Image 1 (cartoon, rainbow, N blue to C red):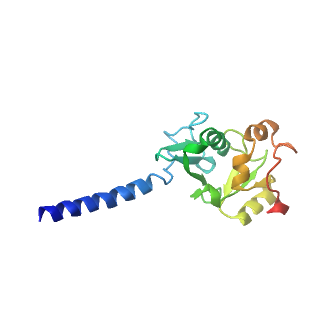
Image 2 (image 1 turned 180 degrees about the vertical axis):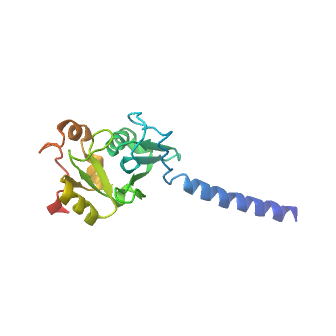
Image 3 (image 1 turned 180 degrees about the horizontal axis):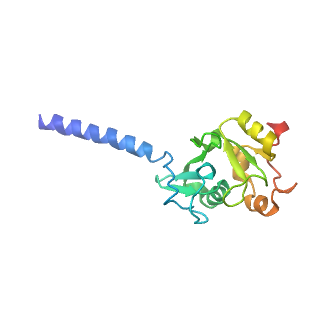
Length: 168
């Protein structure tokens, strides 16, 4: 009897631990009264512009601007398990790989990298029609020289290597 109870307790522990470790790789809520960017250390004030990297050990790293997140990933790529951004329309978390991005000098972002993310290419293109900017795939965002984009205010050659609308 005691052995069966111990086995049941062990099984329950494994199930609960498995669930909680799974949650460790999901994005954590952004608290604008407390959270600050793990790259530039500024307070996170705009949830729609924020992003989050979950490290392989489950540690969340939060960012006030997608550009800050890109800089962090370039320095810590081997430690990254998951990457999340907020949909510009709904403010809901989404996996970076499911997003379409617009970057442009007219887009206001906390550190002026000028990126916003969308859960659908159609919404991104509609935003682009009204506000300008260039379409980026997730791969292109991670490869982008975000410092050059910021410094150049997205000049004509600053975004070389990204997908344009006719390539999407």
